[in-house]
Structure formats: structure tokens, C-alpha cells
Image (cartoon, rainbow, N blue to C red; front, side, top):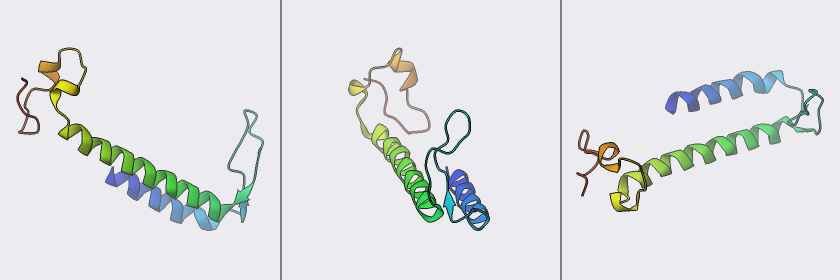
Length: 92
């Protein structure tokens, strides 16, 4: 995840100076622009979505490690939730 974040930061710094002041963030099926916005707003939304997704996936990982096995509905739960490397407790 850290590499993906780093890649997106590098991509932002690479493309930001190359784009015009107004960019088309929305394209239709034919490839024509449906709307326009300043590139600063475009990269602001891009960064916000990136932060939101990283927060969701990081929080989800922390949350899933803490919920009890009884609340997880999964086929062959005993196999998938068995203790591995001390990360999960033994199935009950």
C-alpha cells in the first residue's frame, strides 16, 4: 500500500505541471469531455479519494483483526480463521 501511495504522489508531481489550467475530469463513451474543472480541484479530489481509500482499507484491516470469530459468517470458518503466526486466536 505504501508503494501505491508513493506511486500516486510521484504521478501527481509528474503530471500536474504538464496539464492545462482547466482539465476534463469526466469523459463519455466516445472519449469526449462532459465537464471541465480547474486542475487544482481535480488533483484535490484525486488526493482526497486516495486518502479516503487508504483510510478505509487500513481501518478495515484493524477492525477485522479485532472482531470475534462468532460474528464472521464464512464457509469452513475453522480452516480460514485458524491461528497463523499468532495473528488470530484458535477457533472456538
